[in-house]
Image 1 (cartoon, rainbow, N blue to C red):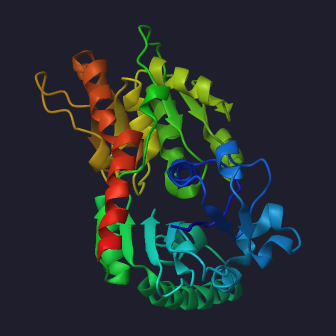
Image 2 (image 1 turned 90 degrees about the horizontal axis):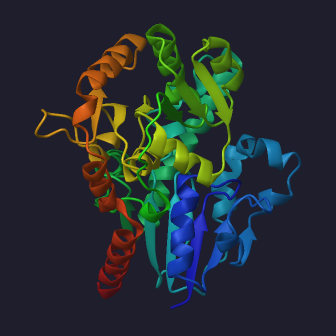
Length: 368
């Protein structure tokens, strides 16, 4: 088959790009179509494929402000010429699934989420705007919601990254979806014999991640917290941090694996559609203290008792008080967690499982 891979944009290596990287291995002859591609921003495995960009790539100031062109994204993705492909795989959290396929082609959408910023999290992204700007955003969002639903009918088969996303696909698109968890290369992570006295927070610095609540909690607790990442809220978060909170910025994959393996536990205060970070730290044998919503409920086994310690502890409110209580509760039962048991749970999400299941899904939809 002649295969095309459609991805929203290639501007950095995050969870979505890890999934695309695995699809590139599965389909070594595939062409990649994307709205934007900044050379050197993604892995060599992705950039080894022919990458074709939209007309927006040539627009001014695109490198630092590509999200400002959001109203034009549907027009851009519909401009790709895909009539010569037998199989189209879109990896989508924005508009990639809205391509116009050859009617005889199979279009499988591996859906990270329906567009968050126009559906249930629109106020997290666009709240607090002035009246005129708010009215413009509401108008654009209304159009994008209409287009998002209409374009969902072009997909032959939806595959969701979690049960949480499956429910959102059904709620917004009225489509059913199979569930296939994203691939994690568990061989990159290993437990350590040495655990150090610090907690770990790994995330992009965005408002909905609720990192501020974790930082405020650790200020109160007086426990060491190491923070990995960067983003729009960096100045705000650093201004909140006390002396026990250390910002490490961006770190290499090797450094991150070492931090995972040596931390007492990962703190995960946001709601994610799935969340690769909790799986990666579990592959390193360390437990997770997480907000009990979203994809975390599917990757973390909650502590029950000394005989059934699971792989982490949940808290029920995104507040400093709830996080403090969860950390203190964790410390009373910390000795019961087993690195071997925790890693075994992470192996459910290993790359091998993803490849076998995805190939099966493609065969199934082709047979219909």
